[in-house]
Length: 264
Image 1 (cartoon, rainbow, N blue to C red):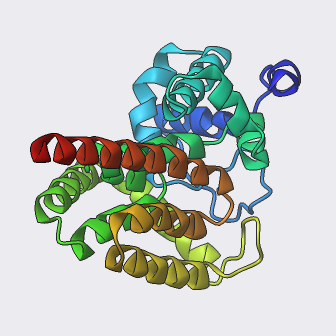
Image 2 (cartoon, helix red, strand yellow):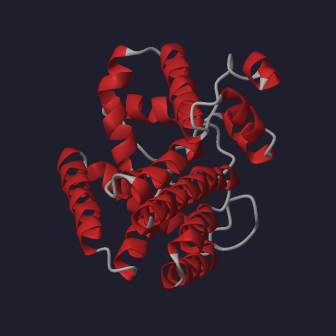
């Protein structure tokens, strides 16, 4: 963690792609570059809502201030999933993808926190995750398959609101996003493993269906695995399993204690 902070946090990383994307929207420039490849520096691949939300922030913050704010957000999400215990957080850094994630300042730790929130507190967090990267939308499919109708309706409703507002603000951005997807195609293999996107997505949907068919104690961690499969290069997202399992264990302990109290 010390090496990452000293050697990498002073240089531009993936968060610069988000800042530059919002800057392009602010300057009236196209958001996407369809000919860009997975190794094009600071290329923006996400759906438009993330860049659109960042526009007022980028209008105020210069790039370096935005970098600091972004790192702060990652650390807050990371510490929250560690239960605000620094030693637990440092132990999670021993899982190499987390160290790499903090090295490159990508968004996947934020997505992991949104997955936990979607399962434990606010189902609409899945819609926000899907607006950043589509894969967390599998959480909504999970809610539907488990017949958690009210929570699924909340998530779908917010997702539709985000989509409608985003389309109204930037129809050109969405046309650029669709053009970029068409240019890459369903057989795109960009990611940690050279597996076509449609294969990853099919596997992720299957795992989500299995997750919904088993008891939540097993199904919820499986959902995290499914979303990670769809994301392909986001193994750091798996740390969402830690707070999910811990919270489930605490819930079981409380339930057993309550049952014992009733019996006595």
